[in-house]
Length: 223
Image (spheres, rainbow, N blue to C red):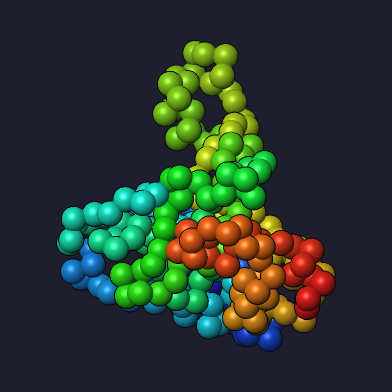
């Protein structure tokens, strides 16, 4: 509903977009016996949002090399492990790398790998996703046993890991890019192409690293 609201109520005209990008650090159940990869209602809505001029960045998932039983209601495919809605064709799907030494340690073991079940290459790029300092959600505090009586119960920041941390890195790169190159606002396909074409190859498998590690400065210098 929120994504549809952007299309119908917020960005009513492509020439005057108020929202330029959306980050979705999330995953949901997907049954391949119901919808082909990238063809679920959510994926179709994401592609529609991109077609309207909005950049959409999505976390690839944290299923590593795992594979699900055919037909299982999980976000893991028989061939690979990209999380729904990271199957969406037009979005930018992001995998995770080591925070400090991605060239040495490469792709996070838990980062979901491609291809999609219909054979498309995903993720598109990777970004730091291990031990990233971020806002500590209530869910995080509960999972850590912080019941309100411990000294850590009022924790506001904590270190998290996963592609949900990697995707916002890419969203930040794109926000910075659009602030410097406003002529690219409303041209998500071109921005995605610039992002992938200027990424740094980490020498890992294409279905693990995508085009490689995002590079904001190279993206700017090549635009």
